[in-house]
Amino acid sequence: MDSFYYRQGKLCCEELPLDKLADSVGTPCYVYSKGGLLGSYNELDSAFAGLDHMICFSVKSNSSLALLKLLGERGAGMDIVSSGELYRSLRAGVPAGSIVYSGVGKTDSDIRYALESGILCFNAESLPELEALDRVAGSLGKVAPVSLRINPDVASNTHEYTSTGRKETKFGIPFTAALDCYREIRSYRNLRVFGIDMHIGSQITELEPIVLATERLAELFLRLSEEGIRLEAVDIGGGLGIRYHDETPPSPAEYAKALVPVLKPLGCRLIIEPGRYISGQAGALLTRVIYFKETGVKNFAVVDAGMNDLIRPSLYNSYHRVLPVSEDNKGRAVSMDVVGPICESGDWLAKDRLLPPPEPGDLMAVLSAGAYGFTMSSNYNSRPRGAEVLVDGTGYRVIRRAETLEDLVRGEEL
Ligand SMILES: *Cc1c(COP(=O)(O)O)cnc(C)c1O
Image (cartoon, rainbow, N blue to C red; front, side, top):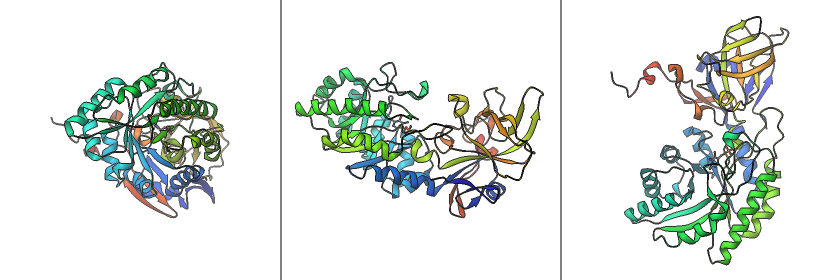
């Protein structure tokens, strides 16, 4: 389902023309489609209808309270990686019992907060983490439910920074050490074995690595049952890719069709941790052209959104489609880079795009920016961040107001 499309020459989010929106909330701003968000959530949910499953939305992809609340109301759980994300999830009304806690570096205070909240389980990634979980749980008189995140040593053919399933990465417990590690959990008084977990990477566009890694997990699951260690859940992580440019990622139906035969025989609950698939296409970054600069060597559309607003191009060399909000400009398209105002050559949003030469004040939309967009933003160059807006049909709501200059210095002392 496309949430952003042209109607009468104007780019709209759902039924709302983006030029109207920009005039009232200002730019840059993030625009999210409620229909798009819930549509992709529902697609995944129905794809796995044949299995007892739980969708734990990856909060790091988009942690807006309003979005977490919408998903939570539909029955989504959350996959968190910090106390901050736990706080956000609880503030959004998500029950602690549907929250799983991932990440390689949980501190004692993170563990305490999560235990006191009563989360569903910890996805533990190392022996020292198990010791910490046992110690903190003991001090609170609680038992920590634990899944082990296994590193299945499978390459996921994505960007090096988002590939997490090879044995050289910092993530997970080596596949070969997993059995011993489960045996060891039984010697801890304050730990309870809950499940088995993996997450091999992000923006994965092929099924093979996911299926291969899931088969490895299933193999371990069965070995463990032979030893009398019964797991309640298998968590296959997130990572399902989306189309930014010309990728052809599997659909949720294809994803489920490939995995259900591996998972169904295990007879336990499935957990998935999708982020990008749910939030990515539901969001766009709306920005206004400040100048059109022609140097003789290259053309630059200098816009009011920069790498502090959307860092994916600078960080991962990512491609995001950029569209003019108005199709009125009939000028002959020329090649240009779309760049921000920040003092770094890496501050670009798009390179070598064919677009009609813009006038100052023209609007552009950077698509597929709902995941790892606002959550990775910063105030670099002391730039206040713009608003976040949730569109529903012809209406919209500001779900995070734009930052002010005063916000930039909040908490500081002279
Ligand atoms: C980032 C992450 C996810 C979500 O990845 P997507 O590619 O956005 O689906 C899920 N689980 C873990 C442990 C993660 O670190």
